[in-house]
Image (cartoon, rainbow, N blue to C red; front, side, top):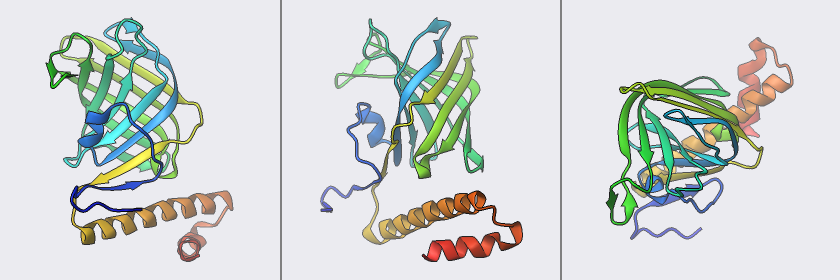
Length: 216
């Protein structure tokens, strides 16, 4: 892969994809897109459908789930559930407390031709079942209520197709090499932990099994 140091930005791509939400990609250090369908998608009591969802994580620590709505009257209609302090207490479960909902539509104010999202302070939570590091996510659910009492709900199921993940960095070469190695080691560790579970490795032998697996 050819690296352009003039542009400074380094992209470590686990699966390359063209992303429709380009502005959000630029602001994120992790960006992943998933295909599937929404069995539930309510925006202020209106029902919509969807066929994709995106997860992003910004350098400042904020994460978000963004959903382009299948709105025949508005191709710019997008909702984003955004929050901080996301946590993964289990390998296959990620939870994100929501403190704001962002809404874009054809009627939104524009800057350089692009709609600007309105920000609605909200409270709620998103739950992702699956693991992005393994490119395996089965579902995402979100529920939030804004300060005006309007409700936003999402239930998304993946269609099983590969998740497309990009990691975007603006750092010096030495730091980027170190972060790339850390990411690769984390992915291998997660895979070995899943292998230990599948083979029924006893707790007392688990650490030794994982270390031996990572060395192979």
